[in-house]
Length: 334
Ligand code: ATP
Ligand code: MG
Ligand code: FE
Image 1 (cartoon, rainbow, N blue to C red):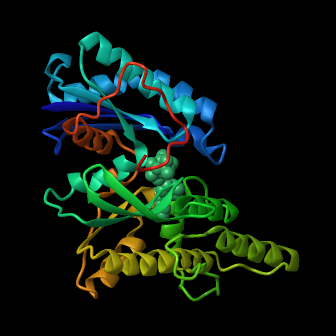
Image 2: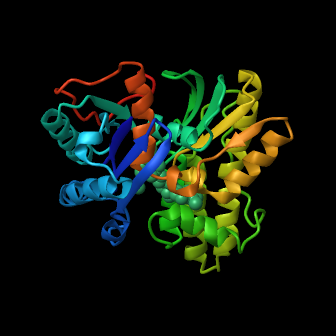
């Protein structure tokens, strides 16, 4: 079986071909980062236009790299939400057109479910129940996976997403966009106790909150500027990263224990953060648990993860009709 996956929810135009739900034959990603960089973030209108310009070429390359033609495809899976509606629409319209023309089943995939399924491309044998920490540009969740298609969110951010906090702090430090990788790099030159930053524990809830931490960093920078004081930028990056990771690691470990999950998955763009990966692996290991993390290229947006989640939806008969629409705001697990 060959599934064509499509992803256009934000600023990556991606197409992938997946064989039998696990073997990646191609995963072409055309990033628009360079286009949006000078605006300091993604400009939705520009993102949709770029997707339109790129999608045909990206799909052609994905098929060519996989060494297959349209006639070999079994189904088309596309991210239909959540994300920027104009960006999503490009992938959804393309997928609907292609599915109709080629008489192929169409599958609408939840973008975050895709991020979670990147782990199934990494480890073939995963036994339920699993716990997944999802931290991306727009989402932060602790999710219990009871079986394929049965997800239970046990905690979410109450304000900023983890990746969003990285991006906002990076911007305040004048580092650029996207901020996560730049903060991680700078943090390697600093010490984690350079600044004393707050952590929101929210009692014993599995929810997260990162806006207080973000404000603390912004206030610190403003105060230093007013007083003409020097800032230890590397130390601030390291202390900020530590504050985010500290909360993520402790809550995930507690949730894994309570969920009786022997294996924990990490998903979303922030899963690319080496410090988070190391700290989480260490903490879970000390508790006799195992961490699975996708390779970097499968952590950030890509179509292989969408094809994988789409394959499992297809196996459950969850295909979409030709009236499939892009949904900007689609709660995970519904
Ligand atoms: P969502 O998946 O919630 O719709 P998105 O698709 O924009 O949002 P992703 O592509 O999953 O987000 O991830 C991008 C985010 O990951 C950005 O916020 C980016 O700063 C962050 N990120 C990427 N690499 C790293 C890293 N090494 N350390 C920390 N954050 C990172
Ligand atoms: Mg992106
Ligand atoms: Fe994403």
